Image 1 (cartoon, rainbow, N blue to C red):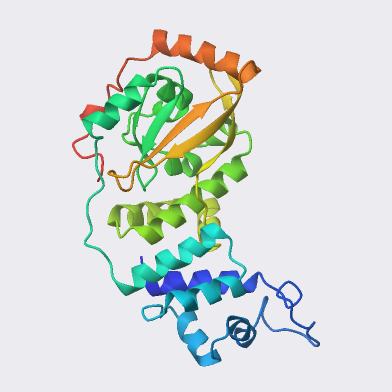
Image 2: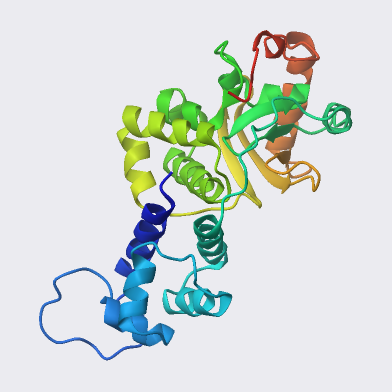
Length: 294
């Protein structure tokens, strides 16, 4: 991805959502030609010259200090995730680390930990949103994704290219927003050409993805709640927590639980029984792929 273009579009879209009123400026008189704050207004709020801010908004963050970035983040009223994204973009503009292909398999220790978690669904994904591994209950939870033989299973492709996704997620628009936001965040941290290819594919094949990608919204999947229409056990509400193993950069583990005593907890028990009867201990199609990271 073009680092300068990413910077430019992110700053422009963030500036466009502010108004003089929300920024604490005097209410403007007369018609404004563009939505949001003017560049000179944003520069004034950040305490930098207009010319300097224009250079920043053109994508030239290579010499921007942390102090300047903090000032821009405050002026744009960025939330914590957006602020981190701005710093990721700045690091990308300054120097790209040599590209390393994402792992196609898990370390034996990490795989063993996933397999040992038999009472809760667990999956591990990479920055492309490929599901690289899941315990049996994790694969049961996402059984709709595993219906297709292609591996690795990809959360973004399922969300935007598979019509069944609209039924699987109770609130598909929110799931779609979150998926794109996470991909956008990961793209700023990685120079993985496979991630770029995935984004290009989805932009070409899905108008819904293309519109969301153009918005430059970013997300982190730390913790929250998912509501699913599961084909086996029906309505299901699960809470998720994410873990990022320190020695496995780019990998994220998602673990799902249900509130004890709830209808969803009973549904997970039924799903456990179904998985033991219907699913193999390992995903048998996983080993057919010569390169899961490609």
